[in-house]
Image 1 (cartoon, rainbow, N blue to C red):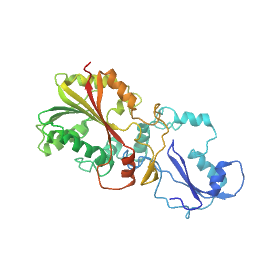
Image 2 (cartoon, rainbow, N blue to C red):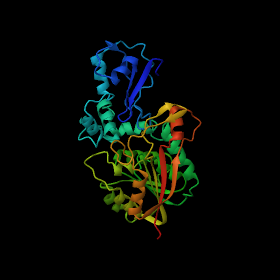
Image 3 (cartoon, rainbow, N blue to C red):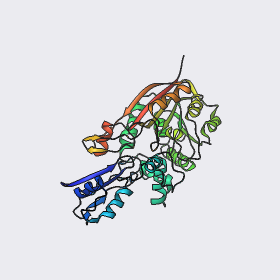
Image 4 (cartoon, helix red, strand yellow):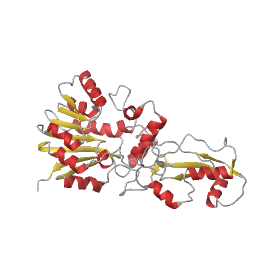
Amino acid sequence: MARPGEFLLSNVSVRTHALGDLAFLELLSSPGRIDPPAVRVRDASTSPFAEGLLGDPTGLDRSIDGLDDVAPMAIAEALSLARRLMLLVDDLDAYHEYLQGPRLNLLDHAHRGTIHQCVGEHVLLRRRPSGVDAWWLAQKFTHDLREPRAGLYRDVQWKFAVAYYAQAELDGKRILDFGCGPGLFARLFARHGAHVLGVDTNADHLQTARRLALSEGLGDACEFHTLELPPARGLTAFAAHRFDRIFLSDVLMFYFHPYDNSLEFDPVELIRALAALLAPGGRIEVLEPNGLFWQQPWLGEARRPYTVLTEYRRRRHGVTPTLEQLSRVAELAGLAITRVRELVPNTADRSRAFDFASEFPLWWFFELKPLTC
């Protein structure tokens, strides 16, 4: 991307980047100087969500090829660009406030906001015709919503689940798929002989799940119902059921950091309500984005990746729970973590995404069981 005499400057906290010449680099190191009269620089940023939540989260436009086609820029214009990209910060208190906490609303640009809020801005303001639900489905699934589309979701999460549950002896088991979406995992469990109850708050997803299950001859093995909010209360509608396994995929993080600031969920209350639905010997299985590496920038040469962590214990932009948070929720709900797996790609495809996910696991899998003592 950068050629001799060119430099890539990045703010990894806000995922902004600029490609500039030596004069631009010197200008930023001493912004009060009045010469040289011009520099060459270009904004090298793009939306981290252009390819969905499973694409490159770095926010770097890797298609840029040097500065040869860039006209010289006046000093004042170059400094304005540097400030807009937060490569140059004049008010450190305002910058600190920008990085803290959620946005007050979609147009609150005084705060960076959580990933949920940044995704909402990207989808609603840049991709308005499709809407959030359509965007969410399109980033994960093929056009017919039957299978995961090519990429990390398929090659990491889905292939792990296919291999894991092929060995799980599901025949005749009762499974609750909590937050089932269009029913991908529910159909997987049913193909292995399980009886599956899928619940979700989205009626359109449930309609898709029913249609796909029927088309595969799994209608008798799968049933799908609307989950009323708040979820812990909504689960009381299924109090007469007992399940051998309860499965959550990419769901639990929303109970730590709701996508809507007006919602307040208690993950302990949720897990406790789910645990009350377990049959003797049952377990809860959680497949979630990795609390350390998910949505961290993909830096370095593709085959030698590295990343930079800008937050962990106090999440401001990230929304995934830490390992300790997951453990505490389990403990308070009367459960123990009995198995942990960190998922890596299961594919021969080599790409920047493959190499990064092979070194820094982007999902983890937990098995929770009731404490016996």
